[in-house]
Length: 58
Length: 482
Image 1 (tube, rainbow over the protein chains, first blue to last red):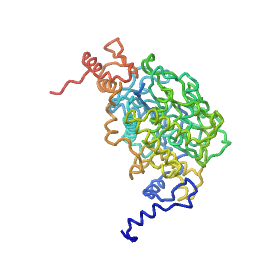
Image 2: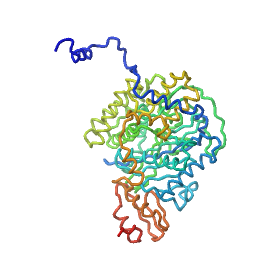
Image 3: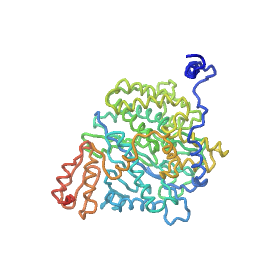
Image 4: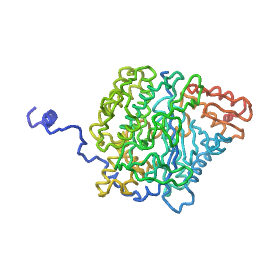
């Protein structure tokens, strides 16, 4: 396996320490399905929360 | 007692989208309920169950559960289930039964059934009650145990909360009778919080279920033989859309009850002030969830949950496959929480909703309190799978599944096995379409053909063969086809 082998490059990349890591944080990724979800969200009536009038239950 | 029986009661909200719609929400709830029973999926009560539960107000279903109106809300109580998969399946079967009815009535464009716990515009709240059967000897009367359970429930919201925009002052309320009560401006504005119920729980322990709700409800109503059993009835949790969150809410709580029952729970877990801590955890915008313990030590909700998990692993691990599943997934979700909300999408409702709302807020350049964003908050809980936001995740395979659609379909009309719900389901099926008078409750029934009640005091017994013989003796069983 030489240094141009993609598997070896992947292996090396995984073992490199992340010196900029300052602790837990949200990964900066755009999730698959986000666009479909936004399409659903754009169809929601902007005023429907004002129409939701509930009685107190238990 | 090592075996458990679980149940969930869900109160639904109704969103009437069309201001000209011919019925008000209470009448819509009534008609949805009546439609379910008109399809032969259960039998309506013929007797008063309480002053506010007249004949026809509700009834038992062929799946062993119950559908009824409670304080103006449509409510479904699952049948008694002896494992988490059944519980999740029957919980969703109830959602599906009412949504099917709405669609069959032709109202799904004008009305939406919302499975949440708050009205974002007022202080109204309604519940999702959890039920756990324990032995009568369960040490529930010891105050220290109640405080330990309280600490567990207060911190459990970090993976069980359903999340909401804004908050409310817990003291003023909108009267259920429709009498308008002044709603005060909240003195601590909040953009987003992880629990829907946190603002509505002003007590640590109390037996009431309305207005003066408590973290630990102490009502003793076993709905079974009181000399053998006790029913732990909790109302602090949110209604969950996520199957994972529902399973973890019920599963981790039952392990906490095991630790209490077996004497392994630790007094070091007790919080200095439970009610205020529940609220501060829910409202923490940085999700640090700092807590102060009764002994003065400082910790976080995450660390306390880790300690309880480690104790459960040490004493309960290997008991049975379901316990191991709970432990494994409890650990998994606690490990993922520090990675941020996106690592919890499809499992934890508040985190999933937070991600969705944040993306939409960014896309449309909205403020957290914009009506459109609040409308998205509601839409997360819409049971209509064509439009509800949660269902978008199931559609793309991003929602954790604990059950299956065919199992849910099956469970709309058939009871679970392993509990008395099985026998009750057989009874309801036999009574559907018959002309025999009946009085049915969780603990048994009486038919007009016989003065003697048939008691079902042990929830672990199906009573199926005894009920079969009983119905046969009264010629109430369907005749086999030639």
